Amino acid sequence: MAKPRRLWLDWTVDRALRGLLWVALRLPYAWRVPLMGGMLRALGGIAGYRARADEQLAWIFPTLTPAARRKITAAVLDNFGRVVIENYSTADQLARAERWVPHGPGLEACEAARAANRPILFVSGHFGNYQAARAAMNVRGYAMGGLYRLMNNPFSNARYIASVEGVGGAAFPRDRRGLAGFVKTLREGGQGAILIDQYVAQGALLDFLGQLAPTALSAAEMALKYDALLVPIYAERLENGLDFDVVIEAPIPHSDASRMTQALNDSLAARVRARPEQWLWIHRRWKPHRVKAYHLPPEV
Image (cartoon, rainbow, N blue to C red):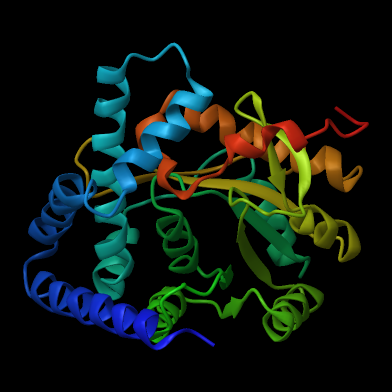
């Protein structure tokens, strides 16, 4: 159980966020999105986000100058602020998603799987806006549910869950009950979405951007168990800052969970290398101080 002081702090932070969202949501969409981006860019240092992103960038790209890292970090914070308000602007996000036409080498396979009632497991990362991809698919007849991690702040969870469910498809928490619901969806031939780029202490040590990163094998394991199509999908932010290019990559061939998960890591890594400013460097994908305990798995 959280300590009273922590609960008080969480409550205070949640109320401040509620007030900020209340004001922002009363502005036109084309104003509120860049406004929130600018606010995170300006205030990210106070929350420690700027330092955290700089640490991760230095670990992965040691030859980057401090000035180059600062430039990327500023853009990362701007994108993060935009994502937050976009995902709480469900109606506007869905309306705008009508113009984000999904494309890519995996689209035909997804259409065939949906027609055959074969489950599809879409996999992405904190790149661009992961929820924009769900919105773009769901307004076109898909029902891509989401497996989400509960927020550390308990006062913010209800609003967060509503934002996940708001773009269509069910939202499943990463707990026993939620996983059971997610699995039921796959068994029935539905579609689900998982983000693969979070630190998982007990995960397999696989390469991501040239460094070992503990990675959950669950997406690949479920794809194998339920014969689901395993498909990388991304929503890359366009230059206008409001719209997205939704790309569906070719499905990952079924083999074994480690090999398939490494292919997913490689897919996301290619996106991040091309557009590092669109990936969420603030969430500590690596913990460099623990690197001495890492060992390469036999497959690598």
